Image (spheres, rainbow, N blue to C red):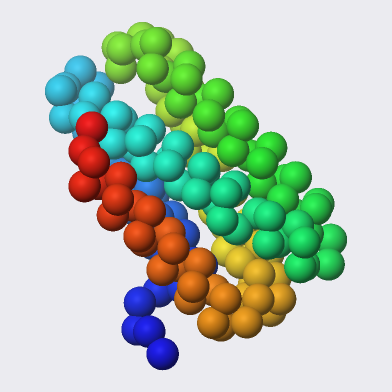
Length: 153
């Protein structure tokens, strides 16, 4: 059996990486290139993470988990809200008065969303999906991410 994380472990690791980036952004002074870089990294990570969940995990949840449709609907709603926050932030500089409000809304939405996934969605998936299926999905996700990384920007 593989020692690599299954699909849920991969997504949980993404959650930690996003949370760490949010904490760094919140602790970085407003008008610095570092903050812009961190926000760009956060945006890339969140968009790829949300897309991967929607592609690899949500169809399985919707099909194999009782009330999976409701769980997926809630998560997709959160993904749309996160995307809107990120889009709104892209047009602003950290000095803009609405930047801090939008960043706070994004951080709150992301943290609540991750908490809900880790307490409801992931346990339901763990219960419904055999370990081998979760491991195979994790391997598939890692392979796709490696392919994208090799292709470069």
